[in-house]
Image 1 (cartoon, rainbow, N blue to C red):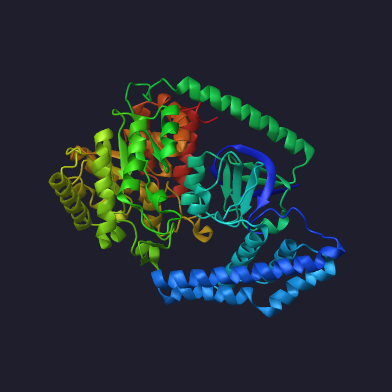
Image 2 (cartoon, rainbow, N blue to C red):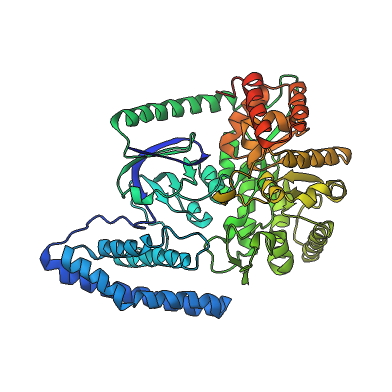
Length: 584
Protein backbone atom coordinates (compact mmCIF):
# COMPACT_ATOMS: atom_id res chain seq x y z
CA UNK A 1 0.00 0.00 0.00
CA UNK A 2 1.27 3.45 -0.95
CA UNK A 3 -0.38 6.64 0.36
CA UNK A 4 0.10 9.92 -1.57
CA UNK A 5 -1.01 13.27 -0.20
CA UNK A 6 -2.18 16.17 -2.35
CA UNK A 7 -4.72 18.99 -2.40
CA UNK A 8 -8.39 18.09 -1.88
CA UNK A 9 -10.45 19.99 -4.46
CA UNK A 10 -13.69 18.02 -4.66
CA UNK A 11 -14.97 15.96 -1.72
CA UNK A 12 -16.07 12.38 -1.69
CA UNK A 13 -14.58 8.89 -1.73
CA UNK A 14 -14.08 6.70 -4.77
CA UNK A 15 -12.67 3.19 -5.04
CA UNK A 16 -11.86 1.49 -8.31
CA UNK A 17 -9.36 0.47 -11.00
CA UNK A 18 -6.85 3.07 -12.17
CA UNK A 19 -6.79 4.41 -15.71
CA UNK A 20 -3.33 5.95 -16.02
CA UNK A 21 -3.60 8.49 -18.81
CA UNK A 22 -0.05 9.75 -18.93
CA UNK A 23 1.48 6.31 -19.12
CA UNK A 24 -1.04 4.68 -21.42
CA UNK A 25 -3.68 7.10 -22.66
CA UNK A 26 -5.72 4.06 -23.69
CA UNK A 27 -6.21 0.76 -21.93
CA UNK A 28 -3.69 -1.82 -23.23
CA UNK A 29 -5.39 -5.12 -22.56
CA UNK A 30 -2.73 -7.42 -24.08
CA UNK A 31 1.07 -7.13 -23.75
CA UNK A 32 2.55 -10.37 -25.17
CA UNK A 33 1.80 -12.06 -28.50
CA UNK A 34 2.63 -15.57 -29.82
CA UNK A 35 5.79 -15.81 -31.98
CA UNK A 36 3.81 -16.16 -35.20
CA UNK A 37 2.17 -12.75 -34.62
CA UNK A 38 5.41 -10.76 -34.21
CA UNK A 39 5.70 -9.75 -37.87
CA UNK A 40 2.06 -8.69 -37.86
CA UNK A 41 2.72 -6.41 -34.89
CA UNK A 42 5.66 -4.80 -36.71
CA UNK A 43 3.44 -4.25 -39.73
CA UNK A 44 0.78 -2.64 -37.51
CA UNK A 45 3.44 -0.39 -35.96
CA UNK A 46 4.67 0.79 -39.36
CA UNK A 47 1.15 1.65 -40.48
CA UNK A 48 0.39 3.52 -37.26
CA UNK A 49 3.56 5.61 -37.49
CA UNK A 50 2.79 6.52 -41.11
CA UNK A 51 -0.79 7.52 -40.26
CA UNK A 52 0.34 9.51 -37.21
CA UNK A 53 2.92 11.39 -39.32
CA UNK A 54 0.27 12.13 -41.97
CA UNK A 55 -2.10 13.44 -39.30
CA UNK A 56 0.67 15.64 -37.90
CA UNK A 57 1.32 17.15 -41.31
CA UNK A 58 -2.39 17.79 -41.76
CA UNK A 59 -2.43 19.57 -38.39
CA UNK A 60 0.63 21.52 -39.50
CA UNK A 61 -1.11 22.74 -42.66
CA UNK A 62 -4.36 23.70 -40.96
CA UNK A 63 -2.68 25.47 -38.02
CA UNK A 64 -0.23 27.30 -40.29
CA UNK A 65 -3.18 28.62 -42.28
CA UNK A 66 -5.13 29.61 -39.16
CA UNK A 67 -2.48 30.68 -36.64
CA UNK A 68 0.79 31.10 -38.50
CA UNK A 69 3.95 29.21 -39.39
CA UNK A 70 5.44 29.17 -35.87
CA UNK A 71 2.49 27.20 -34.49
CA UNK A 72 2.26 24.92 -37.51
CA UNK A 73 5.94 24.03 -37.19
CA UNK A 74 5.21 22.35 -33.84
CA UNK A 75 3.47 19.57 -35.73
CA UNK A 76 6.20 19.49 -38.35
CA UNK A 77 8.50 18.48 -35.49
CA UNK A 78 5.99 15.84 -34.39
CA UNK A 79 5.92 14.33 -37.88
CA UNK A 80 9.70 14.05 -37.82
CA UNK A 81 9.57 12.23 -34.48
CA UNK A 82 7.09 9.67 -35.85
CA UNK A 83 9.50 9.00 -38.74
CA UNK A 84 12.68 8.89 -36.65
CA UNK A 85 14.48 5.66 -37.63
CA UNK A 86 16.22 5.28 -34.24
CA UNK A 87 12.90 5.33 -32.36
CA UNK A 88 11.33 2.93 -34.83
CA UNK A 89 14.23 0.47 -34.47
CA UNK A 90 13.93 0.70 -30.68
CA UNK A 91 10.22 -0.20 -30.76
CA UNK A 92 10.68 -2.95 -33.34
CA UNK A 93 13.45 -4.46 -31.20
CA UNK A 94 11.09 -4.74 -28.23
CA UNK A 95 8.48 -6.46 -30.42
CA UNK A 96 10.99 -8.96 -31.86
CA UNK A 97 12.98 -9.66 -28.68
CA UNK A 98 10.21 -9.54 -26.05
CA UNK A 99 7.21 -10.39 -28.26
CA UNK A 100 5.44 -7.27 -26.99
CA UNK A 101 2.32 -6.01 -28.71
CA UNK A 102 2.90 -2.91 -30.80
CA UNK A 103 0.97 -0.86 -28.23
CA UNK A 104 3.00 -2.04 -25.26
CA UNK A 105 6.30 -1.72 -27.13
CA UNK A 106 5.47 1.91 -28.05
CA UNK A 107 4.65 2.71 -24.43
CA UNK A 108 7.78 1.01 -23.04
CA UNK A 109 10.16 2.58 -25.55
CA UNK A 110 8.84 6.11 -25.15
CA UNK A 111 8.66 5.87 -21.36
CA UNK A 112 12.38 5.01 -21.32
CA UNK A 113 13.09 8.27 -23.12
CA UNK A 114 10.69 10.25 -20.93
CA UNK A 115 12.39 9.10 -17.72
CA UNK A 116 15.58 10.85 -18.84
CA UNK A 117 13.79 14.19 -18.49
CA UNK A 118 12.17 13.52 -15.11
CA UNK A 119 14.80 15.28 -13.02
CA UNK A 120 15.19 18.37 -15.19
CA UNK A 121 14.00 21.71 -13.73
CA UNK A 122 10.70 23.06 -15.05
CA UNK A 123 12.40 25.83 -17.05
CA UNK A 124 14.99 23.59 -18.74
CA UNK A 125 15.08 23.88 -22.54
CA UNK A 126 14.52 20.13 -23.03
CA UNK A 127 11.49 19.79 -20.75
CA UNK A 128 9.21 20.58 -23.68
CA UNK A 129 10.57 17.50 -25.45
CA UNK A 130 9.21 15.37 -22.59
CA UNK A 131 5.70 16.66 -23.29
CA UNK A 132 6.18 16.09 -27.03
CA UNK A 133 7.16 12.47 -26.39
CA UNK A 134 4.12 11.89 -24.19
CA UNK A 135 1.90 13.38 -26.88
CA UNK A 136 3.58 11.15 -29.49
CA UNK A 137 2.86 8.13 -27.30
CA UNK A 138 -0.81 9.00 -26.96
CA UNK A 139 -1.29 9.65 -30.68
CA UNK A 140 0.39 6.42 -31.83
CA UNK A 141 -1.47 4.35 -29.24
CA UNK A 142 -4.78 5.93 -30.26
CA UNK A 143 -4.05 5.06 -33.88
CA UNK A 144 -3.10 1.48 -33.03
CA UNK A 145 -6.20 1.02 -30.88
CA UNK A 146 -8.48 2.62 -33.47
CA UNK A 147 -9.49 5.38 -31.07
CA UNK A 148 -10.16 8.78 -32.58
CA UNK A 149 -11.72 12.04 -31.47
CA UNK A 150 -11.83 12.27 -27.69
CA UNK A 151 -8.46 12.52 -25.92
CA UNK A 152 -10.00 10.48 -23.09
CA UNK A 153 -11.12 7.19 -24.66
CA UNK A 154 -12.64 5.22 -21.81
CA UNK A 155 -14.07 1.76 -21.73
CA UNK A 156 -17.57 1.36 -20.35
CA UNK A 157 -16.38 0.12 -16.96
CA UNK A 158 -15.97 2.59 -14.04
CA UNK A 159 -12.42 3.89 -13.57
CA UNK A 160 -10.41 6.38 -11.55
CA UNK A 161 -8.38 8.63 -13.82
CA UNK A 162 -4.75 9.29 -12.86
CA UNK A 163 -2.77 11.82 -14.89
CA UNK A 164 0.03 14.33 -14.72
CA UNK A 165 -2.54 17.02 -15.40
CA UNK A 166 -5.93 17.45 -17.02
CA UNK A 167 -6.80 20.48 -19.09
CA UNK A 168 -10.21 22.11 -18.53
CA UNK A 169 -11.37 20.73 -21.89
CA UNK A 170 -10.30 17.20 -20.92
CA UNK A 171 -12.00 17.49 -17.54
CA UNK A 172 -15.16 18.69 -19.25
CA UNK A 173 -15.30 15.39 -21.15
CA UNK A 174 -15.21 13.20 -18.03
CA UNK A 175 -18.42 11.25 -17.65
CA UNK A 176 -19.29 10.78 -13.95
CA UNK A 177 -21.00 7.52 -14.86
CA UNK A 178 -17.68 5.93 -15.81
CA UNK A 179 -15.10 8.25 -14.22
CA UNK A 180 -15.69 8.05 -10.48
CA UNK A 181 -12.75 10.29 -9.48
CA UNK A 182 -9.44 11.67 -10.66
CA UNK A 183 -6.04 12.53 -9.21
CA UNK A 184 -3.23 14.52 -10.81
CA UNK A 185 0.42 15.19 -10.15
CA UNK A 186 0.09 18.94 -10.75
CA UNK A 187 -2.64 21.55 -10.31
CA UNK A 188 -3.90 23.86 -7.61
CA UNK A 189 -6.99 24.23 -5.41
CA UNK A 190 -8.62 26.95 -7.51
CA UNK A 191 -7.60 25.87 -11.00
CA UNK A 192 -10.43 25.66 -13.49
CA UNK A 193 -9.87 21.91 -13.68
CA UNK A 194 -10.57 21.74 -9.94
CA UNK A 195 -13.66 23.92 -10.36
CA UNK A 196 -14.99 21.60 -13.07
CA UNK A 197 -14.41 18.58 -10.84
CA UNK A 198 -16.75 20.23 -8.36
CA UNK A 199 -19.23 20.95 -11.13
CA UNK A 200 -19.20 17.30 -12.17
CA UNK A 201 -19.46 16.32 -8.49
CA UNK A 202 -16.73 13.70 -8.61
CA UNK A 203 -13.98 13.35 -5.96
CA UNK A 204 -10.66 14.86 -7.00
CA UNK A 205 -7.17 15.39 -5.58
CA UNK A 206 -4.55 17.51 -7.37
CA UNK A 207 -0.97 18.66 -6.78
CA UNK A 208 0.17 15.26 -5.48
CA UNK A 209 3.62 15.37 -7.08
CA UNK A 210 5.12 12.54 -9.09
CA UNK A 211 3.37 9.23 -8.58
CA UNK A 212 2.50 7.87 -12.04
CA UNK A 213 5.57 5.65 -12.15
CA UNK A 214 4.30 3.97 -8.96
CA UNK A 215 0.98 2.79 -10.38
CA UNK A 216 -0.17 0.68 -13.32
CA UNK A 217 -3.41 0.65 -15.20
CA UNK A 218 -5.93 -1.61 -13.48
CA UNK A 219 -4.42 -1.27 -9.99
CA UNK A 220 -7.01 -0.71 -7.25
CA UNK A 221 -6.81 2.85 -5.94
CA UNK A 222 -8.75 5.02 -3.51
CA UNK A 223 -9.28 8.76 -3.96
CA UNK A 224 -10.21 10.54 -0.73
CA UNK A 225 -11.42 13.97 -1.83
CA UNK A 226 -11.99 15.09 1.77
CA UNK A 227 -8.45 14.57 3.08
CA UNK A 228 -6.59 14.93 -0.22
CA UNK A 229 -5.32 11.35 -0.35
CA UNK A 230 -4.56 8.91 -3.15
CA UNK A 231 -4.08 5.35 -1.85
CA UNK A 232 -2.49 2.92 -4.29
CA UNK A 233 -3.06 -0.82 -3.84
CA UNK A 234 -4.77 -0.50 -0.41
CA UNK A 235 -4.51 -3.38 2.04
CA UNK A 236 -7.66 -5.26 3.05
CA UNK A 237 -8.24 -3.31 6.26
CA UNK A 238 -7.90 0.08 4.53
CA UNK A 239 -10.14 -1.01 1.68
CA UNK A 240 -12.84 -2.23 4.09
CA UNK A 241 -12.64 1.01 6.12
CA UNK A 242 -13.07 3.20 3.03
CA UNK A 243 -15.93 1.07 1.75
CA UNK A 244 -17.75 1.73 5.04
CA UNK A 245 -16.89 5.45 4.92
CA UNK A 246 -18.17 5.71 1.38
CA UNK A 247 -21.49 4.11 2.29
CA UNK A 248 -21.86 6.24 5.44
CA UNK A 249 -21.03 9.39 3.48
CA UNK A 250 -23.59 8.58 0.80
CA UNK A 251 -26.33 8.01 3.38
CA UNK A 252 -25.47 11.07 5.48
CA UNK A 253 -25.17 13.33 2.44
CA UNK A 254 -28.58 12.32 1.13
CA UNK A 255 -30.23 12.88 4.53
CA UNK A 256 -28.54 16.24 5.02
CA UNK A 257 -29.54 17.57 1.59
CA UNK A 258 -33.14 16.46 2.08
CA UNK A 259 -33.41 18.01 5.55
CA UNK A 260 -32.11 21.38 4.34
CA UNK A 261 -33.81 21.58 0.96
CA UNK A 262 -36.90 23.49 2.12
CA UNK A 263 -35.37 25.64 4.87
CA UNK A 264 -34.06 29.17 4.33
CA UNK A 265 -30.43 30.30 4.89
CA UNK A 266 -31.38 32.60 7.77
CA UNK A 267 -29.08 33.38 10.69
CA UNK A 268 -30.19 32.63 14.23
CA UNK A 269 -31.07 36.32 14.67
CA UNK A 270 -33.22 36.44 11.53
CA UNK A 271 -30.96 37.80 8.76
CA UNK A 272 -31.46 36.25 5.32
CA UNK A 273 -28.36 35.39 3.27
CA UNK A 274 -29.00 34.55 -0.39
CA UNK A 275 -27.25 31.43 -1.67
CA UNK A 276 -26.62 31.05 -5.39
CA UNK A 277 -24.96 28.34 -7.46
CA UNK A 278 -21.85 28.59 -9.63
CA UNK A 279 -22.30 26.59 -12.82
CA UNK A 280 -20.09 25.66 -15.75
CA UNK A 281 -22.58 23.87 -18.01
CA UNK A 282 -26.34 24.27 -18.71
CA UNK A 283 -27.27 20.90 -17.19
CA UNK A 284 -25.97 22.07 -13.80
CA UNK A 285 -28.99 24.34 -13.43
CA UNK A 286 -30.87 21.26 -12.23
CA UNK A 287 -28.26 20.79 -9.47
CA UNK A 288 -29.01 24.31 -8.26
CA UNK A 289 -32.72 23.48 -7.95
CA UNK A 290 -31.97 20.17 -6.24
CA UNK A 291 -29.82 21.92 -3.63
CA UNK A 292 -32.27 24.75 -2.98
CA UNK A 293 -30.29 27.61 -4.57
CA UNK A 294 -31.79 31.10 -4.91
CA UNK A 295 -30.53 31.23 -8.48
CA UNK A 296 -27.26 31.17 -10.41
CA UNK A 297 -24.69 33.65 -9.18
CA UNK A 298 -22.03 32.75 -11.73
CA UNK A 299 -22.68 31.14 -15.09
CA UNK A 300 -19.30 30.60 -16.73
CA UNK A 301 -19.53 30.61 -20.52
CA UNK A 302 -16.12 29.32 -21.58
CA UNK A 303 -17.49 25.82 -22.25
CA UNK A 304 -18.95 27.19 -25.47
CA UNK A 305 -15.41 27.57 -26.82
CA UNK A 306 -13.95 24.22 -25.69
CA UNK A 307 -12.89 21.84 -28.48
CA UNK A 308 -14.34 24.07 -31.20
CA UNK A 309 -12.63 24.76 -34.51
CA UNK A 310 -14.57 28.03 -34.79
CA UNK A 311 -16.23 30.51 -32.47
CA UNK A 312 -19.72 29.64 -31.18
CA UNK A 313 -22.53 31.25 -33.09
CA UNK A 314 -25.07 33.64 -31.61
CA UNK A 315 -27.64 30.82 -31.70
CA UNK A 316 -25.37 28.50 -29.72
CA UNK A 317 -24.95 31.18 -27.05
CA UNK A 318 -28.68 31.90 -27.06
CA UNK A 319 -29.73 28.25 -26.67
CA UNK A 320 -27.28 27.68 -23.79
CA UNK A 321 -28.59 30.70 -21.85
CA UNK A 322 -32.23 29.96 -22.64
CA UNK A 323 -31.80 26.40 -21.32
CA UNK A 324 -30.70 27.61 -17.88
CA UNK A 325 -33.35 30.33 -17.66
CA UNK A 326 -36.21 28.00 -18.54
CA UNK A 327 -34.93 25.39 -16.07
CA UNK A 328 -34.79 27.86 -13.17
CA UNK A 329 -37.99 29.74 -13.98
CA UNK A 330 -38.73 33.49 -14.03
CA UNK A 331 -38.11 34.21 -10.33
CA UNK A 332 -34.53 32.98 -9.92
CA UNK A 333 -31.78 35.28 -11.23
CA UNK A 334 -29.07 33.99 -13.57
CA UNK A 335 -25.83 36.01 -13.64
CA UNK A 336 -23.93 35.39 -16.86
CA UNK A 337 -20.24 36.19 -16.80
CA UNK A 338 -19.07 37.25 -20.24
CA UNK A 339 -16.20 35.42 -21.83
CA UNK A 340 -13.31 34.95 -19.40
CA UNK A 341 -10.70 33.15 -21.47
CA UNK A 342 -7.22 33.37 -20.02
CA UNK A 343 -3.80 31.77 -20.17
CA UNK A 344 -4.84 29.14 -17.60
CA UNK A 345 -7.63 27.89 -19.84
CA UNK A 346 -6.95 28.06 -23.56
CA UNK A 347 -4.12 29.33 -25.70
CA UNK A 348 -6.16 30.95 -28.44
CA UNK A 349 -9.63 31.96 -29.46
CA UNK A 350 -11.08 33.43 -32.62
CA UNK A 351 -7.67 33.51 -34.26
CA UNK A 352 -6.14 35.55 -31.43
CA UNK A 353 -3.10 33.74 -30.11
CA UNK A 354 -2.08 34.85 -26.63
CA UNK A 355 1.51 33.54 -26.84
CA UNK A 356 2.71 36.14 -24.37
CA UNK A 357 5.67 36.12 -22.01
CA UNK A 358 3.38 36.79 -19.06
CA UNK A 359 -0.17 35.92 -20.20
CA UNK A 360 -1.71 36.30 -16.74
CA UNK A 361 -0.94 40.01 -17.02
CA UNK A 362 -1.65 40.23 -20.71
CA UNK A 363 -4.46 39.92 -23.25
CA UNK A 364 -7.10 37.96 -21.38
CA UNK A 365 -10.72 38.10 -20.35
CA UNK A 366 -12.37 41.49 -20.91
CA UNK A 367 -9.22 42.81 -22.60
CA UNK A 368 -9.43 40.08 -25.21
CA UNK A 369 -13.14 40.78 -25.75
CA UNK A 370 -12.55 44.50 -26.19
CA UNK A 371 -9.87 43.65 -28.75
CA UNK A 372 -12.31 41.43 -30.66
CA UNK A 373 -15.60 43.34 -30.79
CA UNK A 374 -17.52 40.97 -33.14
CA UNK A 375 -16.82 38.12 -30.72
CA UNK A 376 -17.98 40.22 -27.76
CA UNK A 377 -21.09 41.61 -29.46
CA UNK A 378 -22.19 38.12 -30.49
CA UNK A 379 -22.33 37.09 -26.85
CA UNK A 380 -24.05 40.29 -25.70
CA UNK A 381 -26.72 39.93 -28.39
CA UNK A 382 -27.44 36.35 -27.30
CA UNK A 383 -27.69 37.35 -23.63
CA UNK A 384 -30.15 40.14 -24.39
CA UNK A 385 -32.25 37.91 -26.63
CA UNK A 386 -32.44 35.21 -23.95
CA UNK A 387 -33.49 37.77 -21.32
CA UNK A 388 -37.18 37.38 -22.21
CA UNK A 389 -37.13 33.92 -20.57
CA UNK A 390 -36.17 34.99 -17.06
CA UNK A 391 -34.19 37.21 -14.72
CA UNK A 392 -30.90 37.36 -16.61
CA UNK A 393 -28.03 39.59 -15.49
CA UNK A 394 -24.74 40.49 -17.15
CA UNK A 395 -21.39 40.53 -15.37
CA UNK A 396 -18.10 41.73 -16.85
CA UNK A 397 -14.93 39.90 -15.63
CA UNK A 398 -11.40 41.13 -14.91
CA UNK A 399 -12.27 44.82 -15.01
CA UNK A 400 -9.19 46.74 -13.87
CA UNK A 401 -10.03 50.33 -14.86
CA UNK A 402 -13.11 52.55 -15.02
CA UNK A 403 -12.57 53.07 -18.76
CA UNK A 404 -12.78 49.32 -19.43
CA UNK A 405 -16.13 49.17 -17.66
CA UNK A 406 -17.44 52.18 -19.57
CA UNK A 407 -16.36 50.62 -22.86
CA UNK A 408 -18.35 47.51 -21.98
CA UNK A 409 -21.40 49.58 -21.06
CA UNK A 410 -21.11 51.50 -24.33
CA UNK A 411 -20.96 48.27 -26.38
CA UNK A 412 -23.96 46.90 -24.51
CA UNK A 413 -25.89 50.07 -25.38
CA UNK A 414 -24.93 49.64 -29.04
CA UNK A 415 -26.19 46.05 -29.04
CA UNK A 416 -29.47 47.18 -27.45
CA UNK A 417 -29.92 49.73 -30.24
CA UNK A 418 -29.17 47.11 -32.90
CA UNK A 419 -31.78 44.72 -31.52
CA UNK A 420 -34.36 47.49 -31.29
CA UNK A 421 -33.78 48.44 -34.92
CA UNK A 422 -34.14 44.78 -35.94
CA UNK A 423 -37.34 44.40 -33.92
CA UNK A 424 -35.92 41.59 -31.80
CA UNK A 425 -37.49 41.43 -28.31
CA UNK A 426 -35.39 41.70 -25.14
CA UNK A 427 -35.67 43.10 -21.63
CA UNK A 428 -34.45 46.66 -21.29
CA UNK A 429 -33.99 46.71 -17.53
CA UNK A 430 -31.30 44.02 -17.21
CA UNK A 431 -29.04 44.48 -14.20
CA UNK A 432 -25.35 44.92 -15.07
CA UNK A 433 -22.46 44.21 -12.73
CA UNK A 434 -18.72 43.76 -12.62
CA UNK A 435 -16.42 41.29 -10.98
CA UNK A 436 -13.91 42.58 -8.48
CA UNK A 437 -10.90 40.32 -8.88
CA UNK A 438 -7.87 42.58 -9.30
CA UNK A 439 -6.55 44.98 -6.64
CA UNK A 440 -7.10 48.07 -8.80
CA UNK A 441 -10.82 47.30 -9.04
CA UNK A 442 -11.07 46.78 -5.28
CA UNK A 443 -9.30 50.09 -4.60
CA UNK A 444 -11.60 51.87 -7.08
CA UNK A 445 -14.72 50.12 -5.78
CA UNK A 446 -16.30 53.45 -4.71
CA UNK A 447 -15.99 54.76 -8.29
CA UNK A 448 -17.04 51.52 -9.98
CA UNK A 449 -20.08 51.26 -7.69
CA UNK A 450 -21.53 54.36 -9.34
CA UNK A 451 -21.38 52.63 -12.73
CA UNK A 452 -23.06 49.26 -12.02
CA UNK A 453 -25.95 47.55 -10.25
CA UNK A 454 -23.91 44.92 -8.41
CA UNK A 455 -20.44 43.60 -7.58
CA UNK A 456 -19.25 40.02 -7.44
CA UNK A 457 -15.91 39.42 -5.71
CA UNK A 458 -13.91 36.74 -7.48
CA UNK A 459 -11.65 35.71 -4.63
CA UNK A 460 -9.63 33.17 -6.64
CA UNK A 461 -8.05 35.80 -8.88
CA UNK A 462 -8.15 38.52 -6.23
CA UNK A 463 -5.93 36.39 -4.00
CA UNK A 464 -3.43 35.53 -6.71
CA UNK A 465 -3.12 39.08 -8.03
CA UNK A 466 -2.93 40.63 -4.57
CA UNK A 467 -0.22 38.24 -3.39
CA UNK A 468 1.52 37.85 -6.78
CA UNK A 469 1.21 34.06 -6.43
CA UNK A 470 0.06 31.95 -9.38
CA UNK A 471 -2.75 29.81 -8.01
CA UNK A 472 -1.64 26.81 -10.13
CA UNK A 473 2.07 26.95 -9.27
CA UNK A 474 3.00 24.47 -6.57
CA UNK A 475 6.25 26.38 -5.97
CA UNK A 476 4.34 29.31 -4.46
CA UNK A 477 1.34 27.42 -3.11
CA UNK A 478 2.21 28.49 0.42
CA UNK A 479 1.72 32.16 -0.47
CA UNK A 480 -1.71 31.70 -2.02
CA UNK A 481 -4.08 32.11 0.93
CA UNK A 482 -7.52 33.78 1.03
CA UNK A 483 -7.00 34.44 4.75
CA UNK A 484 -4.11 36.83 4.11
CA UNK A 485 -4.77 40.21 5.82
CA UNK A 486 -4.10 42.07 2.55
CA UNK A 487 -6.91 40.14 0.84
CA UNK A 488 -9.30 40.68 3.76
CA UNK A 489 -8.64 44.44 3.72
CA UNK A 490 -9.53 44.61 0.03
CA UNK A 491 -12.76 42.65 0.58
CA UNK A 492 -13.72 44.99 3.42
CA UNK A 493 -12.95 47.98 1.16
CA UNK A 494 -15.28 46.62 -1.53
CA UNK A 495 -18.08 45.84 0.95
CA UNK A 496 -17.89 49.31 2.51
CA UNK A 497 -17.96 51.04 -0.89
CA UNK A 498 -20.90 48.92 -2.06
CA UNK A 499 -22.84 49.68 1.12
CA UNK A 500 -22.34 53.44 0.73
CA UNK A 501 -23.57 53.37 -2.88
CA UNK A 502 -26.38 50.86 -2.16
CA UNK A 503 -24.91 48.33 -4.57
CA UNK A 504 -25.41 44.60 -4.00
CA UNK A 505 -22.21 42.60 -3.48
CA UNK A 506 -21.67 38.87 -3.79
CA UNK A 507 -18.69 36.53 -3.38
CA UNK A 508 -18.44 33.89 -6.12
CA UNK A 509 -14.91 32.55 -5.57
CA UNK A 510 -13.97 29.35 -3.78
CA UNK A 511 -13.64 31.29 -0.52
CA UNK A 512 -17.43 31.49 -0.22
CA UNK A 513 -17.67 27.70 -0.42
CA UNK A 514 -15.38 27.14 2.58
CA UNK A 515 -17.35 26.87 5.82
CA UNK A 516 -14.46 28.37 7.79
CA UNK A 517 -14.89 31.72 6.00
CA UNK A 518 -18.67 32.05 6.37
CA UNK A 519 -18.65 33.92 9.73
CA UNK A 520 -15.98 36.28 8.40
CA UNK A 521 -17.84 37.03 5.15
CA UNK A 522 -21.18 37.57 6.89
CA UNK A 523 -19.41 39.74 9.45
CA UNK A 524 -17.96 41.89 6.66
CA UNK A 525 -21.50 42.56 5.47
CA UNK A 526 -21.94 39.98 2.73
CA UNK A 527 -25.57 38.94 2.26
CA UNK A 528 -25.06 37.03 -0.98
CA UNK A 529 -22.80 34.03 -1.56
CA UNK A 530 -22.38 31.96 -4.70
CA UNK A 531 -20.90 28.45 -4.47
CA UNK A 532 -20.68 25.14 -6.29
CA UNK A 533 -24.19 23.62 -6.03
CA UNK A 534 -23.04 20.60 -4.01
CA UNK A 535 -21.78 22.96 -1.27
CA UNK A 536 -25.07 24.81 -0.80
CA UNK A 537 -26.43 22.53 1.97
CA UNK A 538 -23.31 22.79 4.16
CA UNK A 539 -23.08 26.57 3.68
CA UNK A 540 -26.79 26.89 4.48
CA UNK A 541 -26.25 24.83 7.61
CA UNK A 542 -23.39 27.11 8.68
CA UNK A 543 -25.47 30.25 8.17
CA UNK A 544 -28.34 28.84 10.22
CA UNK A 545 -25.97 28.21 13.16
CA UNK A 546 -24.62 31.76 13.12
CA UNK A 547 -25.67 35.14 14.52
CA UNK A 548 -24.69 38.38 12.80
CA UNK A 549 -23.32 39.72 16.10
CA UNK A 550 -20.91 36.77 16.35
CA UNK A 551 -19.98 37.16 12.68
CA UNK A 552 -19.19 40.86 13.10
CA UNK A 553 -17.00 40.08 16.09
CA UNK A 554 -15.11 37.48 14.02
CA UNK A 555 -14.59 40.02 11.22
CA UNK A 556 -13.30 42.67 13.65
CA UNK A 557 -10.85 40.31 15.33
CA UNK A 558 -9.62 38.95 11.99
CA UNK A 559 -9.00 42.51 10.80
CA UNK A 560 -6.56 43.11 13.66
CA UNK A 561 -4.32 40.17 12.73
CA UNK A 562 -1.09 40.46 10.79
CA UNK A 563 -0.54 37.06 9.16
CA UNK A 564 -2.60 34.53 7.21
CA UNK A 565 -1.62 31.83 9.70
CA UNK A 566 -3.07 33.83 12.60
CA UNK A 567 -6.30 34.43 10.72
CA UNK A 568 -6.65 30.79 9.65
CA UNK A 569 -6.06 29.47 13.17
CA UNK A 570 -8.53 31.96 14.62
CA UNK A 571 -11.24 31.18 12.03
CA UNK A 572 -10.94 27.45 12.67
CA UNK A 573 -11.29 28.01 16.41
CA UNK A 574 -14.37 30.17 15.88
CA UNK A 575 -15.89 27.59 13.56
CA UNK A 576 -15.63 24.98 16.30
CA UNK A 577 -17.03 27.40 18.91
CA UNK A 578 -19.79 29.13 16.97
CA UNK A 579 -20.75 26.44 14.46
CA UNK A 580 -20.26 23.06 16.14
CA UNK A 581 -22.56 21.30 13.70
CA UNK A 582 -20.75 22.74 10.68
CA UNK A 583 -17.33 21.84 12.07
CA UNK A 584 -17.86 18.08 12.16
